[in-house]
Structures are given as C-alpha cells and as structure tokens.
Length: 423
Ligand SMILES: [Zn+2]
Image 1 (cartoon, rainbow, N blue to C red):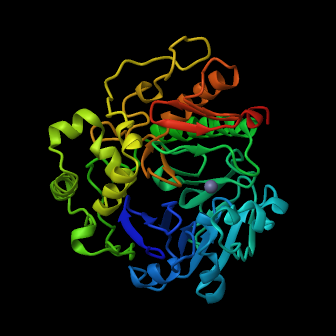
Image 2 (image 1 turned 180 degrees about the vertical axis):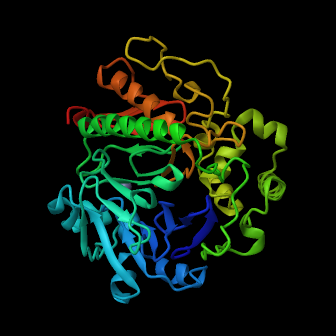
C-alpha cells in the first residue's frame, strides 16, 4: 500500500486543499493559505510521506516560509509536523497549536490516537501556542485584522480543537468537528458532547456575526467554491505563487479545473471510468446511490472509488442520493420525524456539496478536516438542532452495538457512545 500521497486542488484565491491518500485510510484534508510573506499550512497529514516536500515541489515557487497550524493533536493532522521540525527556521517560522489544554496536546503519545494504528507518536514541535481570538497575520509587515486568520477554541472532537477563520474570504476551517458523509468522531480521548454542543453555539454566533458584516460591507469579491462544478477562481496574478498540480498519474486523478466545462467534463469522464470498471450504467448507479458522493469521498480518484465500492458495497448503497429539494424536516426534539431528521433539507445546499447556483458569495463557508472543503455554514445550525434532539433522547441511534451508538441525519453521522452522551 502506498505510504502516502497528496493531491491538491485550489478552492479559492488564497486556499489550496490537499488530500493525503494515507496508508491508514484517514484521507485528511490539509489546507494551504497563502499570505504575502508566508504560507500557512493547516495540518500536516500522517507523516507517511513528507507534506513539506510535496509543498516545496508543488508550487511554493517563491520559497515563502511556512507557518504550521494544527487544528488538533490527532496523528492524521500532526504526523507531518516532524518534517517541518527537521527543516527548522528560517524556512519554518513556527509550529502552532491551540493552547486550550496543553497537557492534552503535549501527551500526544496517548491523545493523537497513534496507538490505534500502531504508528509512532507524532513529533509536534510546537513553538507557538495560540489563544482564543488570537490573530495570525498573513502579512506581518502590514498587520490587519482583515488580512488574518482568527483562532477560535472549539473543543468537542478533542479538547484542543481549534477553528481558523480566514476573514478576507469568509472561510472557516473547522477541523474534525464537522464533515458530511463519513462519521464524525465524538468518541475519542477528550471528546465531549457538552463541549461539542457549546462549540456549535459558539460557531453559529460567530458565523452569523461575520455573515452580517459581509452583507453590510457587500463589496467583498465573490467567494468561489471549488466543488460541485462551480467555477474555481484562478490564482490572483502576481500575488499568488502556489501552483498546485495533481500528484497522481494523468489517468488516475482529476486535473486542475480549467473552468466549469473543463472540471465537469473531467469529472464525467472519471465517473464513466468508474462505472465501466464496476459494470454499472449511469441510470442504474443513480438509482442505487449517489455516484458524486462516492467520488467526493474518494477524492475523485477512480481507484479509491472502486476500492470503496468493492470493499463496502452496503456502505456505498446506503449513501442517499442528493436531494436539495427534499422538504425541510425539523430536527428539533419532539418533531417525531422518526429515523432521520433530514438535516440535509434544512436550507438550499445545506449539508450538500454546494453547487455554484446555490452558493452565496457573502455567506461564510466551512472547510472541513475530511470530505468537504466548501460546506455551507447553515450546516452548523442544522447539526445544533439535531444534537439537541440526540441529547434529549428524541432520536434513536441509526446504529448500535452494545453501548456504542451512531446517530445520523441527512448527510451527517456522529459516533457517540452512551457514556459520551453524558460528558
Ligand atoms: Zn481528529
């Protein structure tokens, strides 16, 4: 099995999403945010291969120094820190993590979950501890809150989880606290349902305030969304040097988008290739499951999609086809919807891969630690309502094995063992 592999895709003027096809099967989403004087690296992958080497050779043409920020201590987000530690200053300015619970973070041999995968504890190398509300400037010579990443403490998935808000784009990196289509872990060392619900409230209030500001200003440039066939903004000339190319062979990866038609055509070709291998026609596949969802989970790599389809056909078939027009179903406690509460239907594009027509350029976009780089912020309120229902006992688990339980609504599933419901 491959020791590690990265595939990059630009999702906006300043942001590149990179997915690691790691040997542990975590597929973490890593992000590069390009500032004037630095490249901010949000998470570093498992470390099976050097993410730093990949960035060095895939577009950091100006050799800007790196500032690494980890969203939380888990090994699939911090394992690559060691390569930045080895490089040291001046090419690496700092390695930064949230200071909410340093004891938790610094005991990474236990809290990184590395033991579950029989790999060594990550070498974190933290040289800067970030406070709640702290600003990380993208141009230190001209420090401005409008050109910065704002740090938010967001415990829930872990005690040390942070979110980062990229103010000039209205983009909030939420780490592993939220992503669709694959279960969110609220069952880790340091996970807390109470913390998670408080964090959802914090993020909703934060996002609402930022969206209000963006609408009041109204002059911000449109925020491009890279998934769902929407147009991806080209890199701004002169100011952006990250030139990301697919890491895989041409037949094995979706190349960089060249506009709507280019990306759509390439993705259609990828789907055709997948269907050919597994022996389905498109109409049959669409009746069984969402091919786009599977492809997104597989990061649009046919080999990954084929493996997922062949190794877990029931899981693939269980993927509900996207239905943005489905009627909204209240997820609040006592709504009596029975089974799923329909988070996906809460608002246009909510919990779905947002299409270009649905995207609101002044809204805040969520970028997740797995699966999705352009999630509508409305998902936060949907999930908050669902968590209230779960906490009140109004929602039955979608899966149970003894004291272990999962709760599902729409495209979201949360792993919450019984004992964790009380935390
Ligand atoms: Zn995690």
